[in-house]
Length: 127
Image 1 (spheres, rainbow, N blue to C red):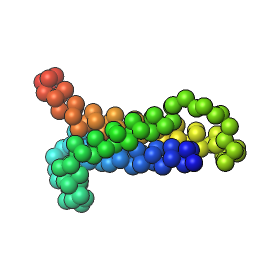
Image 2: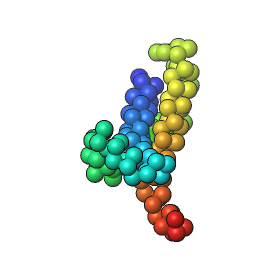
Image 3: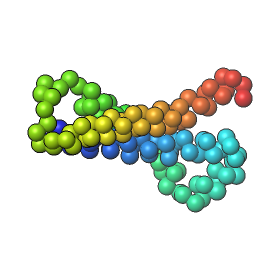
Image 4: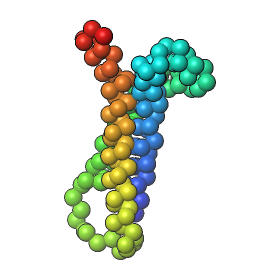
């Protein structure tokens, strides 16, 4: 049951961190590469990006909390190393949880950089 909780929290963390990537990193990356006209086209095609960007603080907070819970569940010391409920699948579930956790952390970090650090860094550099 614990591995199922880890998998569910890891998948939730993956989806919320993907939300951070969509709301913040994608428009900034498109603006950097293709310019403002491409961003207008992107937003007119996907208008939900505006709503996501209005709530980016909450999206990042929820994603960060889910990542912290996921990391705690995955990396906490285990008292009992056996997994009788899943058998051989226990090892596969553990690797899957760790993989989705680290992918989620990478996605969250990219979204965090573009949402909160890219513009101040560009201003500081004079770009």
